[in-house]
Length: 446
Image 1 (cartoon, rainbow, N blue to C red):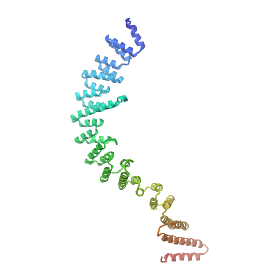
Image 2: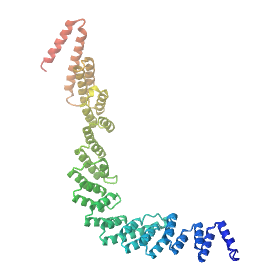
Image 3: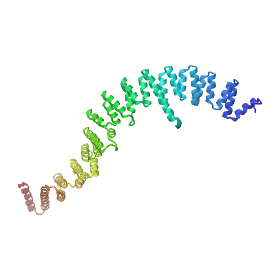
Image 4: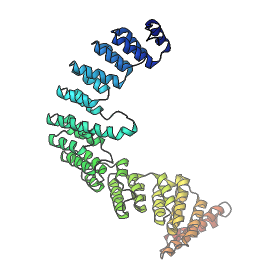
């Protein structure tokens, strides 16, 4: 109504007061048609219409102002409009930049190719897949981005800029082609970078090829890591053994077959890992792998070589195996057990659970000897000998009688000596007679 009546001042006030974006855009276009560009720009600014602002700034060839609008608004459509205008005026570098900012990488790539802007071209191609679109369009954009990277990779390959081509082939999911270029051009550092980014989901054939490359160059450790990733544990173990490559805990876990492997295959590889770890002095790791393979006796022998007493006692306790109990007790006897009651008790417990009555009896005999030699405590020695005799009678071994006879004689001798000690105060003659009898008995032929 105000427009039709040509009440323009009132109309301007009305538009300003309403602050309606559609109305402000209309008012901007109206003033633009009249050549009132400042008023039009002000209206577009109030309407928050960066596309219209960029269009009008470019029309006035005020590209600096247009760039400022794009940078401030971060609007893709405005950036695309600015890029097209910059291209039209042959401001190529700026146009490439704003095509990238608009997410129109295909236009930026096209322009960069035409003008030999290889650095900008690589940057645009790599950014092609970084946008996060609406889920409905994600698949389409991913395919488009991959094609753009492949096209750019081929461009760099033709220009023999192979490091750039390799990077793009890899990013586009064409690892095999990327590696072929690395091999042909001997791009060792680039190949190492690709190899480092390979995962368990990568093509095993690709990983195996990378491994071969490093092995040919004498870089065995890199080759072993790739063979592990390529699911070639047997070959990896061969190399570890040939080149004395230390198997770490993480390597051992990666080499261990999964539950889906056959029992025979799994057991065989576990034994190989354990054996190699033992040869390398990693006894606790060897123990772990032998245990997983069901070889508990070998596992304990490795643990014994590690010298970790607490773990040895724990392992024996959870294994519940007579041979393991006996091995553990035998090991504990090599330690300073007579000054540690806890070790003494562990030895007794292990031999008891193993039902190794002969060994237990001989241990008690050793306890008695220490009581006599070091402490001169014949009463405790007697108790130990009696305890040994109590257990040896349970033995089922054929030669137990010899041990029974030996313990019986020692018990008798110790008892006699204790009796002599008691008599020395009141009846020295009888005490001496007992001691002489003990001396005669010691020197008597057996």
